Length: 74
Image 1: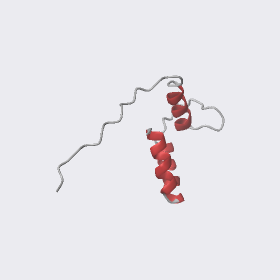
Image 2: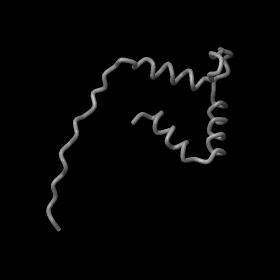
Image 3: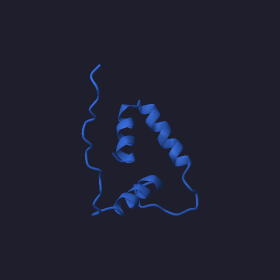
Image 4: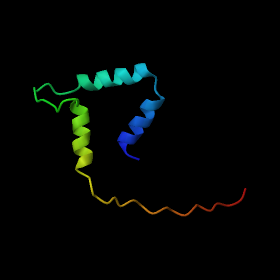
């Protein structure tokens, strides 16, 4: 599960006020070097779209499922 998916799931459970406060805090952390972002996108949206876009078409090597561990009966 990606960090983006985990964040989306956690924010879906959080109250609206928490989500707004997090967004405000993230926007305050944005660099203020005057570079313009595309219309409708803030710094974090453009960063994540560039980051995830760079992995487009990449095959992920996920580990195979491990067998269930066998334990002694109690």
